[in-house]
Image 1 (cartoon, rainbow, N blue to C red):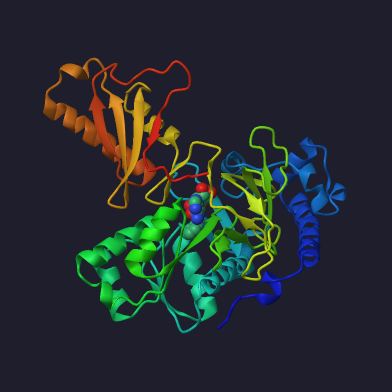
Image 2 (spheres, rainbow, N blue to C red):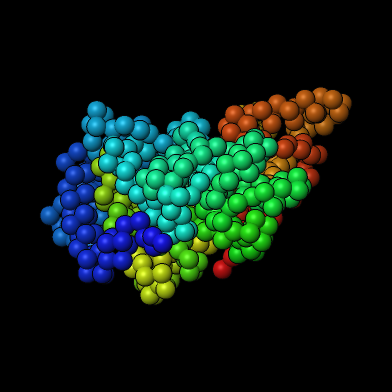
Length: 435
Ligand code: DLL
């Protein structure tokens, strides 16, 4: 059986990988300096020019890039290739207004799809498999990424997208899907629905590739048991390409980062200092091989640990742990990125004060989000029907801001505990991050 999609890359010697990265970095820095005024200004501000960058040992001299930079440069400010060379955009989930938009040339699409094909092969997929893609399609990278990877591998690809569980299960049984790609919470929901319908013995799945949100080892165990599969983690972010920036192999002890395309660093999120392998900190990526949208030292805000221990699968690429948390307050609810500040904006725009709490939970394998907000003193004497109407108004405001349903509960004025220090706005009962 095929063990690797790109064997010469995935098992390359350390020296070889460093050579690719040295060359790639020097080239990428020149390209952004020449083509992206935004980058040039950032580098000038830090007093660094392309001549200072001879290889990855000089990476630390370069400025970091954050989501705020991407928003500031929106929409075209970070493009390193002319528009005519670009063939696609994708965008991060959940944020409205100034979204983060990433651009791709045809080569960038191929690079990204190759990452996903590697993830599929690492999960045991071959061209004989039927790959059932239930990640969302559209601006979200999940569907298009795994779809492309599956095509590249030559597997029959079912572009199911998310939702419509009955249809998912029907195709899964009729077409005998063998590899399922979706978020772990949707996999758990599908498993439950399959059992409820008594269809467990009609399912032919052998593996699942689940990512885009945090999930625990316990959840992995439950999904594996319920579907009789091996469940693999996959990580990625739109800014760097999408799913497949890193992926799990059969060892299931961390995700291999595709180091022939991306340089990974872990930094202290407070000081920006680069930490040695094995230490926990914020993951930073340099996507040197990308043409349209190469990002240099992009801060992911994901907290993790890198490990260079030899892996039993034979891949030599560095491994990252599952994200162990975030260095900002972003939540991922139903696979959608949600910032508390977005919720606050909706509340303030509707005339409420910033006394609120966001309660996130997972019930029956599905995320729930509830926003509790204090009524204004005038509203307190209103009849119930008026209060319900106000709640509905907020539900719809939140839906258009976040793209997902959030339950709203208007509570009595002064009933939300005031904090003496930092307000505790978010109560996440899911306990997804361990370690
Ligand atoms: O979630 C890309 C993706 C699609 C990855 C499908 C895997 C599968 P964004 O919407 O830009 O992109 O969200 C990126 O999601 O910074 C992490 O915080 C989180 N994330 C992604 N994969 C994982 C994972 C896609 N396996 C943000 N475990 C990232 C935990 C993950 N968190």
